Amino acid sequence: MSLPPQLFKVSDTIWELPVTYKEGMRVPARIIAPESLIGGMEAGVFDQAANVACLPGIVNYSWCMPDGHWGYGFPIGGVAAFDPATGVISPGGIGFDINCGMRLCLTTLTEEEVRPRIRELVDELFFAIPTGVGCSGFVRCSRSKFRRVIESGSRWCLENGLALPEDLEMTEEGGCFEGADADTCSDKAVERGFDQIGTLGSGNHYCEIQVARPENIFDDATARAFGITIPNQIVIMFHCGSRGFGHQVATDYLQSFLRVMTTKYGIKLYDRELACAPFRSPEGQAYFSAMKCAANMGFANRQVILHRIREVFSRLFHRSPADLGMSMVYDVAHNTAKLEKHLVDGELRELLVHRKGATRSFGPGMTGLPDCYRETGQPVIIGGSMETGSYLLAGMASAAPTFYTTAHGSGRTMSRHQAKKMVQGRKLLGEMEQRGIHVRTASYGGLAEEAGLAYKDIDIVARATEEAGLSRRVAKLVPIGNIKG
Amino acid sequence: MPYRFQDEISTADIAFEAWGETREELFISCAAALLRTMAEAPDQVERRQLLAIRLEQEELDMLLFSFLQELIFYKDARRLLLHADKVHIEQRKDAFTLEASVSGEQIDAGRHRLLVDVKAVTLHRFQVEFGENLWKASVVLDV
Image (cartoon, rainbow over all chains, first blue to last red; front, side, top):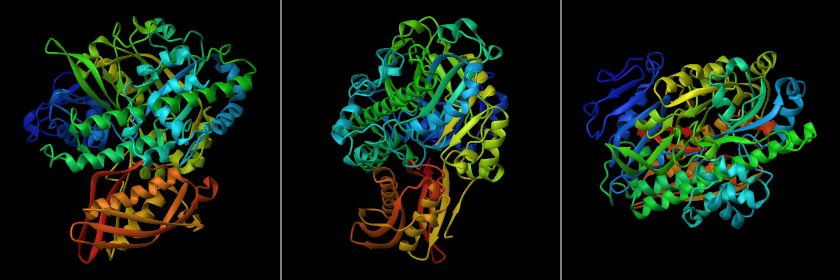
């Protein structure tokens, strides 16, 4: 892959496209990648990062994380902050799956205790957590009750016995984006999502049983602070978002922004997926509220899934979830826009930070972290492919330039069809079984699409975030069981 | 098949191009590609339920966007996988209108051999054009 000739190296892990790369760029675009990853970045990543740099009110740089790849509007892995007074909000900077995110839950079980029962455990989880195309959940929820869910997120789960108070504390934003008004969401969005609470979906969404092996601990003290204290400790990691509700919110507002962006607000359109509106406009504020509703659905969805996981473990091991030590490490959101305070040229300013396929990575001592993580920094959960393992990392003070943001996954390098041509789902299932990973899937074709060879090397991505000062590695977690949509 | 998946366009999502001799045929081809994205065995999706879809948009490409989006909506809201059987498009002074009859059945994971859930139609490289006596569309689906 040839790189744009204007691209130059700022440091070992930072590359910059100057404003001269494309007419209309207000700030440079910066891509975080070591030499080993920059060559593999698709041309579309550079173009999309440059398009983002053209949006009104953007501050400092248009960023792309090391797992970045060609998306729509923003690249996946795109990060940009806007001045709320002069800048815009864009659904294309957040993604269709609003608050797609990762959650990590501890147990006090060890691999030795769980491995003999892994088949049973994965089968039970597969039944307890609906997966796949158009799946609906076990939570019976009316349309009117759903409006309460999307305004209060995990708080609704707490009120309904589906959460523990400490779960909310261990969730970004306490599991609820404040200021979410259900009236800003269409009936269609509600209709599409009201019975999908507690469902995984498909694609790259999964739930994994993982092991923290002693040889994979990078920082013992921080691992302990995050609750990883036993050799070969079992943890549960899962990845999913706001389901059909969030997808419809994004679709609705993409269309409504297209109608006003140029005609009403005079903003030049570089790519229809970058449709946007001034943040302070009625349209911008309505989308900000609807996006919060979708984010709250994402939190509630993951909370209900956690509740189901606890029930399964408790039933199988005949011990209460508390006795099994099933507390949350953290829940991180990938696709959001948030008002946050950041230092810009020595001045503390409120900014609207868009993160699309990127994880907030607050450093030690920052406001918004639970007390127990004030010294370590925020737990960051980066999911790898289902074959290779995932990472638990910690936010760093040096992540300030990216508005305290890091990578979110390993990033695809191969199309879904290409992966399916190279890998047969049933065969992959057998091979993973031989390597000690028991898988249940709603789709063999879908499984093949998610094969490890379709992704960048997660070890390189995680190390790159550390070298760039965004997040430091605490532990690598390897899978022994997986359910996939 | 009047559509072709395009590996070179998108790594994380699903891109396809579709074609038809008329606008109506093009819309039916795009609906077939959408169904094939979600189910490996679209022929196994039986026509047990009939639905009518009526839409209006100022631009033809946004009419296709809305049509595909409507099919995605029914996948989640009614758990229906749908074929587009008949499509009729009329061009009025300042808008296009669509009347379609679609049919299908509730998702059956085993029989339909499900692949991947489609979240949305994106406007990334989204295009409807006419040339060489053929209507063509390029679509990228977020999955």
